[in-house]
Length: 311
Ligand SMILES: [Fe+2]
Ligand SMILES: [Fe+2]
Image (tube, rainbow, N blue to C red; front, top):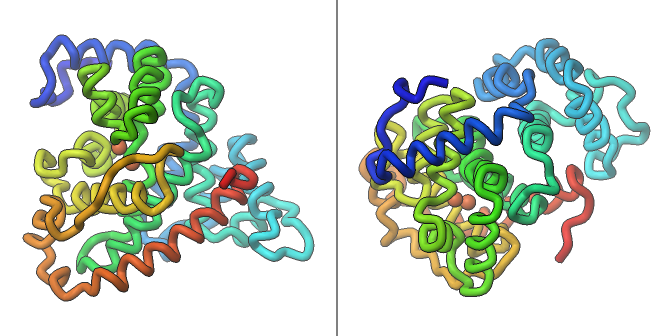
């Protein structure tokens, strides 16, 4: 990878930026991202009616681990099948494209990062990521012109940096996680205090390495500081608020955070209002109730993929 092609990171010194990029480059090179990941993300992130089902089936079949995962989830009681699906095509039809998208992304990440090396609880991580994805999509329905699938993808990948940090800075990240749990503070604050940088920077380095789209990269890099986001400001603000909501409504990182959310006074809300005056009329109490319903669905989905979630 040629580092010269990347933008400067305004909040970091060149030395820290280079250190992060170097570690990400060395540690995550093997295992690398599964070959089917990016083509599938491309295919699945467009409008559902344009997705070519045969192409999705072909790509899913190409990767044994993902194919097995799709078959296993499609056979779960969640979908009420009398007989488990016998083929990938039948499993994709049963699951629907949105669920296939989720399974593909989680399976790919599971393959790319060996789970025993994760610095945080994998089930809590996915519960939070899926929660943020579903809340982001629900939120996007309130905003004219925002693509729900894009919002879902951004929510699902926003904390990619936790996996990057687990692999590239295992000891340092473990200290940050321990401090966050002990002091009940947000994980990114503990990272900043102990490491001098956060999962936003390591996630950004990995997103650059994987050539993820610019708007998704912006979300990964700026979701804890949405006022610093560039062109994808609305999407970053939306994921920021969804992330905050998830963390106070049970879809957290598996530990208690002393943290309150006030949507209206959050700078991200002002960013969204600038582009979406229609938000002014949203009934926030009702909206939060709807989000709680999404949280219950996330629990079902995570159980189907990973087995029962500990209470
Ligand atoms: Fe985060
Ligand atoms: Fe998060």
